[in-house]
Amino acid sequence: AQSVAQPEDQVNVAEGNPLTVKCTYSVSGNPYLFWYVQYPNRGLQFLLKYITGDNLVKGSYGFEAEFNKSQTSFHLKKPSALVSDSALYFCAVRASGSYQKVTFGTGTKLQVIP
Amino acid sequence: DAEITQSPRHKITETGRQVTLACHQTWNHNNMFWYRQDLGHGLRLIHYSYGVQDTNKGEVSDGYSVSRSNTEDLPLTLESAASSQTSVYFCASSPLNTGELFFGEGSRLTVL
Image (cartoon, rainbow over all chains, first blue to last red; front, side, top):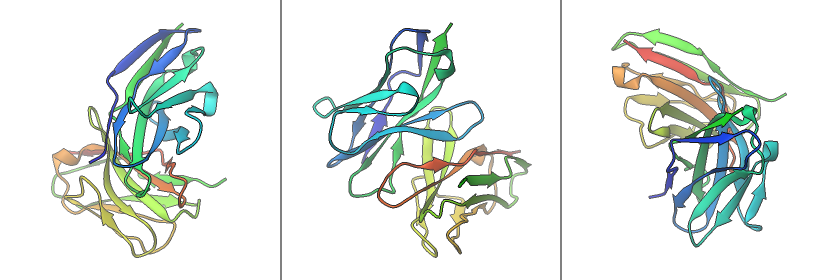
């Protein structure tokens, strides 16, 4: 069975500092990996995805994520955090052959402190 | 612009009542999904559909049903609501092969 772990319930970072939100995964075969963001009382919004190719993926709002196959990780990063980045972030995975079965992590709340 | 809408956004009901949550998308996506979001559990898949007349059970399907009579709509029905079904429900859709999901704004259901 596939799974996603987001080990931190909350990450606090000062505005202007770099941020990292951690994600590790388990899946059979090649993974498709995703990050989503959820603002209060809203649905999830797609940020970025890794399917194949370059291990560093760039997405919306200046976010990027690094795929590390040996460590089965897909950490979300941003060089300089903004207060408006404060939200709930979800990592998700699916196996390459079954695009309907997306498994989500439990989410990490990012708090950017002014 | 294409979108995915859910209704109602908020609903309070009593144990044992039947409840239907509507989901309508104008993306013309074949794949549609229902998730529930609970603290500590992230999002869990309830039911999904690959196209008209196709429905499949997800990991937490007990007590829920869906039907797909057209491309645009995937209503979720709770046959006899239980307090354990108090949650926020999200509908999502995706085009073939790209993988990313497009989510609605959610329906908050409270079962008393």
